[in-house]
Figure (tube, rainbow, N blue to C red):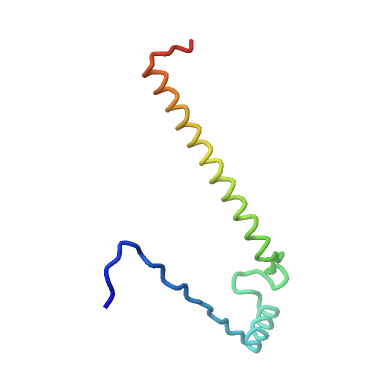
Length: 98
């Protein structure tokens, strides 16, 4: 029997690997079908391929953009708080700047 505690214990993180199933025969048949009948969305097989980028590069750009937005937002909030505190202090002691 466990004693009650005020502190929450963290649970172990689980490993959630979900393997992907690759069917080579199905992939080959789909390419042949697209070659002769066109893709399902109306484009041909030549036009359906996009430039491949690595996941690491995509992650860097996304995380960099979100980091910049968060830091800019944090900077604006801190600046507004400092100005508000300065105005309150100046008002409390009746100090006139202009």
